[in-house]
Image 1 (cartoon, rainbow, N blue to C red):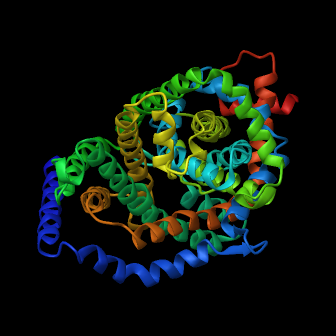
Image 2: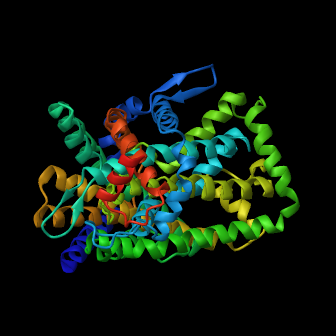
Image 3: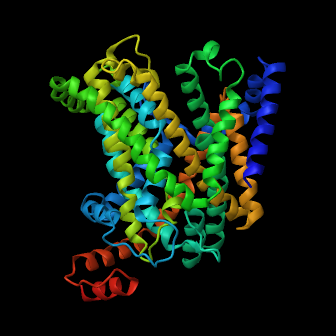
Length: 519
């Protein structure tokens, strides 16, 4: 299998190099021209904007995700706050079930899912929000993260509840399973199958595009930039595909082992990459310690004070909520695929764990980025740029060699995102084509080939198309979450009754039911 992946990567890399040499100025244009009209059409539908004023518009997909998160927060009695302590206890192992079905621990499932969301959105997305909406956007971004905790809670509880168990000990879960099974229980078999298939198709597209080609493309550009640029870097001047080959081999070696292998890597890489990034942020904040109170004042004042920047309060709110919801991907449903592999027979325990994901991604990592940008004053500089350039400028005010750290962080973020999204795409692929060796190998080879393809090209319309597919996943997913919310609420109440009881009985389905009956 390793030879197959390596052979496929090298073959596609050679083709990429040949095309780059013979059609250096036209290959990217041909790709854009081929997919452009279709990509733009789909993107216009998914990201259709509701015009509020002449200068302010809000994407309907944002309202779809935000209203869902708000509904689940209220419906479940603010479980995102009430359940925070239980979530930490579960991750620490207090309710571990070693002999329960599944493949990974609660901590491993969390790191695998976090690796799929913590990435460029935390670096570039935050910077864009502040450059467009000012410091006040940070407040609304954090609010989006807190509300998104409830969406993740519901989705990942259902992912474990309706997962499939295979003869080889592996499991498959996620929206495609709880949409088909859960709606079948409610007499909506055909509707459930349609939503499940629609989700799976969109997830495959999102996996190959946003979770693969976009990630490797950004990582390649960052690596070339810090190793001499297009002219000086070994991977510049038409050799970017070689970097893609190296990454494809590394990703291939990890994903060969399935979810267990992915989890073993992410439980080491995620804490490492988050730790490095947060440590660098702390250094910058320490150097600007006296400006931190001013930064928080600017955040709160900017969130509720109308200003020309960002279109007033509504504009600032939209920028913050948009970047927050898009960063943690709450409501899209992808994370439940990773969380479904956890070892437990009490599904709601993983719902609690999953609720930590938006908190880590948005409330912690995004806020650290925002504070660095604000205290450094980089967002006020005309030469700072936006996105990654703005974040890099902010860190460089204290750490002059931060671009090297940033490049390393981007590569780690991209690598971890790719291996996690390969799993999401694989489970959607096998849902459609069957859980068998041929389907497994074919998707993994395809995924690695797309890494090589994505490294050298200018993505253009391909990214717009894959982003649209990514957020299209939230349409069937949120419909299912609304319908099955009562099931999650019952399981939540039963577990809370067990957790609050004075009984020392080990966590099992029967123990939960017994304590719930007493309550």
